[in-house]
Image (cartoon, rainbow, N blue to C red):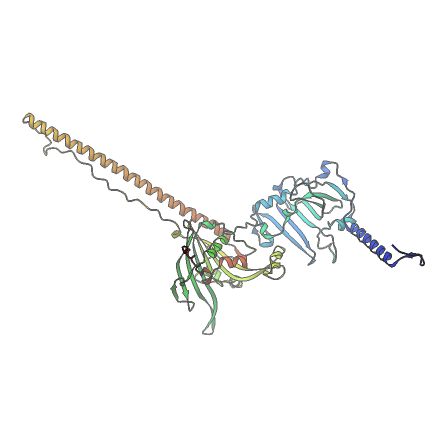
Length: 540
């Protein structure tokens, strides 16, 4: 190190080094300054540690509201789950049922017996530092930072029994897996506490609160598929515009779960959109079993990204009643989503339908409507991958109904009922008298004949009795088969009612990825045959 003694100071190199050192120390000091600093005060009394003593039982919770603050958009995003008529529903989605009961219980239970580990501040000045400012639209100002997440629980009377503002995370490791240390405070109070909590229970993603399995079917039970590919087009006639159904193809496929094989039952092509012409798979092609299996598996895991309530007047079987087709507002609601109710009661869709037949006799009808987009935080990650614009997922409206199709059930195979021969009648003289004995030889001969006839009669009677028992056995077995079949019919009809009660009120929205899997066209069901491997030639 050289020192410029003539100047009485450091050399230029040394001065630059000192400047860099001082800058680094300054940056370190700034980093320390902006971190939450506290001197924790241990909470000694048990009653002081318990944050919400009023919430001693999760079953007391009748509503749960979560309010998050979106810093990018500077807006509040409230999400609410309430109990209505003994059922949990989502008001933000037109009271769609919140079927994920385990998630509801877990969210409420997270606040039950919630205890503070220590107090980190008593001053409201520190609320921004610890990120526990209440997300209240009347209190938040533009550019404000440190806004927390509000979790509010009310009981059946509407009383607020827990209001927690969750702030920044304390990076020190927590005790239990899946839990983190967080700075929190009770809404309306100044003290800031440090607690251990699992914040994943307070999600605002729609699909975390609903039954993810929409159709509730097993892919292995799919027996039949009908892919009805058509579109709706406007046709002008006599100065009036009417909607016309233009069919492209209708494909009927069957699946044999014993052989794990798809077969083509019928393929109809419509050159002019109306006239059907039966065709076969072209030479050199075969059914694309992989795509058909993907379709079947997608049905077993069909996820929805949003819902909308249908207008009143549609039956559970998706039949448009006369008063419905005469209601302009209801018809407009359907048309905007790509569905056309006809006066006949039938409903057509803009992009065809898929019919799924199950081995238990239940048949699903999936009608595909217009395209749409769903905005929301839960879709950002998928949208970032290139599916749609930022924060949006491209999707499609879907109408679902169930119906009973007896043709999907295996008919009982009855055994033929055997005929029962008539029992032999004992022989006797017409006058009812017993023949007189003439001599010993004649008497002995007659005794032998009588004994033989008696034996034959016994054997015939035994055969008749055995045949009667066999007839009764066959009749019992046939009755058992019929009763078993009748039970299958009743079970299927009951399941259809249950499913339609679930589907009746809703338009569903599925992502375009899901739609592409379950909406195969004529081109999508076939593929080029794989070249058969050549038999190896014997060595020369």
